[in-house]
Length: 616
Image 1 (spheres, rainbow, N blue to C red):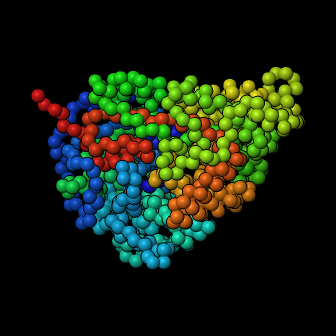
Image 2: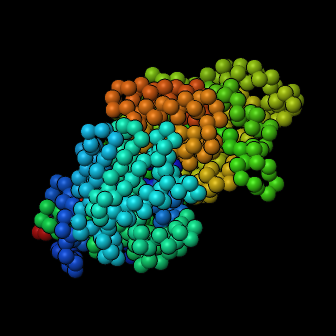
């Protein structure tokens, strides 16, 4: 399933972030960990006729039914609503629950059929026809038709709820024209040629119109399919359904009995009985549970543990997979958002951070000085144990197609940082080690990050110490990831945030329009602008049209370099090192194909099975 760029909370130690019941976890789940009992051969009996036109999944080999895969998460989901989810803690789960018109094969790095069995482009280069497979059904047995696809796009375009995916479906301010001549045909006409139509259309999850349209009509869609929804009432279109959710403990997904995917032997997928996201307090707890055999895979490992994994993989029935530099980025961004809606105690147009801090944060000279005060070269060996690389973009060195090594960057230069701050007229007049601005205000701000992510907290502490060397006082505020996302997207109660962005799927900058466009819901430093509020952001909007619309790859790459140069010249993102991805994964499973592209472990989980144990 293709997805837009989103906030990475991960620190999922499995992935997009979802124990009080430590006893339950150790007792009930330990048997399913590495070395646990094998899946009973053909235990699952399909009770329903196969669809008329099933999706025959491409995979190395067929598997057996039964068993479960357990992955660790340090953050629970905010929502099970796939249209409203924009953080990995939720989308790791919703992407398993809902399908779309097309999928993406991480192994071949190509789009592949999903609900649409095929698609074609007319001679006008604007009109795309998607042919839906007959017999596909939601988890309650209701047929999936073009009416559900049209409803899903209607929700995606809703201006009130403004899902992040909406930012991918607009060209030069114009929506796509989407029609359905019959129950199994969807026609999309774009305002101008679009090189990414299939991938962008695939970002829209297919929702059950018969369940959610009444809620949508009454204005309650944004609060539908919450974490409080009863599993039986959460109707899905993907390979899995919600089986159980226990806040702070686990999210358990079960097989969708009506899923339209089959293997080469015409047996319905998925093979697994359950996919379990086990909630753990932090990365250290996840590591201990993996070592104890209670988790089958980790997608967010601390670099200092790589040595143990390398030394013990041979005798502990797992493999440490080295995937190279992550396709996820770390950064700091400052709050430049004005109040856009009437808020108690604040006036529309007033900066959320107040006039004094806004004057600092909105000055690119200040932001460059901050960037040049951070010693990334020292951060890599001390925090990442050498298992990281410098990075200056969302297209990291791990992105072989789109990475641009020669772009604008403001790397460590302590003397230049001090010079820039002095050019603002700031000085430490009272000798306390903290600069004052020209009005005598101490230059200090809070830096928030998610407390469950040990690496991010360590980076924040490192940055606090580095900025103190140039006279800027930073107060670190670690907090729950989902609260952090609410601060960033909803109430804007922050000065600066240290977070991460996960690449879109496919890993193409066009999938990040929700971040780069000035109107984007995830345009972090100042989201949802009615119109571009700076000339630079207006230019980025223009360049994104080129990236999305131009079929020539070299022209698209050139436009992307320009976008990165603008962003980095302005230092809207202050980039930090990105980690090398080394993921330990149990050897008990067949068809697992770890990938640098998200979800790195679960992207093909519908085709994964438990291997039969060898007998002697």
